[in-house]
Length: 126
Image (cartoon, rainbow, N blue to C red; front, side, top):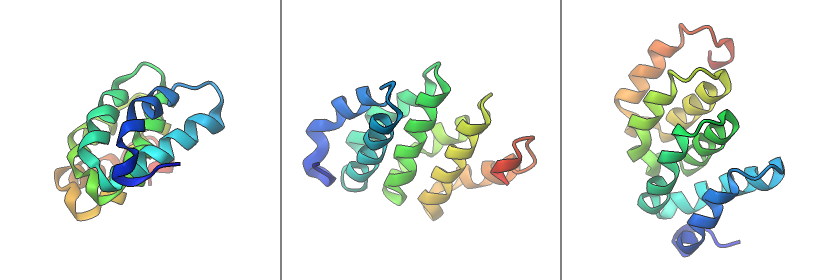
């Protein structure tokens, strides 16, 4: 599949695929979004950040995973990831934490929020 900036036209279809009931297809879409996001973070983040607010926790996890795969270029998602650290679902928190770690130094205040999150009841975040 197309990755990097060449994959930008596929972003809407990939975002729609995050809701696929076939886990393998949805996870592949999440990874592909992250790969495109490495080269075209603005296009991907504009589409993926709103997905972090969906009602389905699995959908939110997939969106956070896409950001994690994108890594440092996805620093624009740090505000949304910080909010995701307060999610009711531990799996969402874990994936948001992974995304913040993947962004690294560009995560700024999100890294500080992650430090505070380590005291959470979600033991897997630690």
